[in-house]
Image (tube, rainbow, N blue to C red; front, side, top):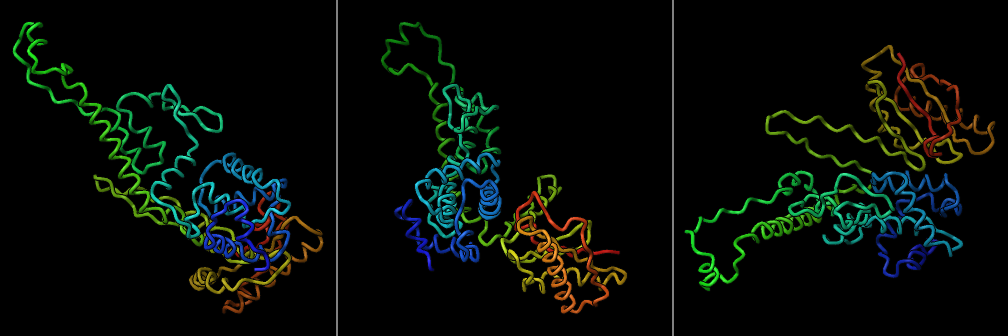
Length: 382
């Protein structure tokens, strides 16, 4: 590497993991070849929005609100404010460390570290009256009974332990204490002077003992679960985790969760999807380029199969560009991209009269990530 990325990261994290830095460099790939794209400008909102959408949400799989993610980015920017060149590799390392997700790049993390990360991400601390207080300054509603005896669910939920919600009803009320046999009536003086039960406290301690044991059990199994599922939080390589459908006791399967949208590549690539029940392709391009990704040959199988089953259908090919640069040059670039995709589709065995160039009303896409704007859409027309 022309740039010593590891040395730059270690200016901020002395024991930074070399393997993690290497995987972040591999993830960024072509973005590091250009000096401008290898740096992060924290004063450019478009740039910080791109970091939030492409890295924090798509790569790390975070589901926090934008304000929380922007605050984390600003915190890293403040940490690096004395550095004239804010390398993208270092920024991404510090953000992954901030959210406890270096494991996505092969970093080591123990079970207790996972629980601590979950607490940090939740941004919650317990107030004196049992309510939860957002560390960003806002009070959270709905947990005013957090410090009452037997309220175990808020503790487990604040730690981010799986199964906390299901355990809440059982944990909210301690198990009833066994009822001791009623002793024969004796004179008060005799009961206190017999010397056989000096504690004189009965069994009032039993509910507290049961509560403590229940909390310990929840923490133990929760931490153990976190350690086993650590690598399943957000699969590496942009893959979407698939969970099995849980069938309730009555035998009726719960409705399947909607499929997550495919991630938009930062450069050239192809994403296959459905639109109104028909297959479509979105072909993405590098900045200023019209070269079609090799992924098209695999992704186009769905539209090819559809055309074979529907002889009257055709494919509409429409090119788009991002708003940067000269408008006339961008319009020409959109046209060239569409023509390149048409030629590539025809090479796959689809007849030329089945592939029609269709100029969209607006070829320049604004208000979106530039990576998403540099595209050609292939849709089915009937």
